Length: 253
Ligand code: FES
Image (cartoon, rainbow, N blue to C red; front, top):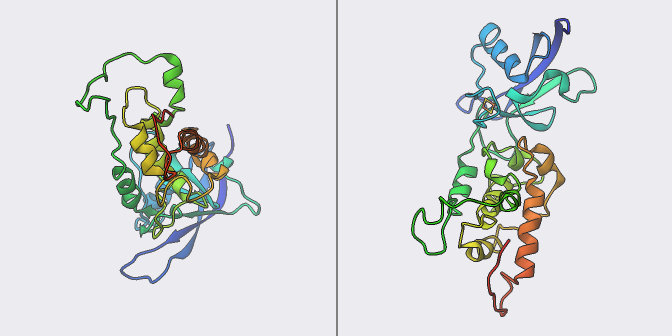
């Protein structure tokens, strides 16, 4: 078992009521064994500075609440070992998720991203339009695999935080919302894949940014958002969706 270690950790602090911009506070912490970043933040809050704000719930990589930037990389704090954080000088710098507004300290506001996801009708829409129709039918193994794990997305915001994703002011839907569109467009039970492709070929959609490897690296569920968006692009091109003057007949992803 690894010995306890004193480590320096810099944490971005920001209180919108008293600060115009974030400032960095320096803490010395004792890291024992293979402690997680979330464990260190809880330790700082309980034993050093109770005013530190950060967010977590499940501590098991399920709720998606604990995303932060660790030395510039978006990570889930509960799934990140301190020993696994890339560092040159032994220092660790923790900041709120990039590309999301900041509520306070390490708490990013995920509502704009969640609103973008909500805007794309993120539920299965069967062919005949009746709620629940076809939902109890078995899916074949290859039909499940075609979802590319997109159905496991926990909306943690890490892909949106990875450059060059959505800035809070941009029209870009962002990889999280585009993955959600893929999830439904690729679902054999969903009958609205053509409409979904038409939606994502508009402004802020799949042609707005080049799919970035950084999105794949950031995703803790290995959904590979950039690959899913490449699949949407391929389906849109194959079916000429979004290209004016061309007749579209079905648009299966
Ligand atoms: Fe739930 Fe980290 S606390 S994902």
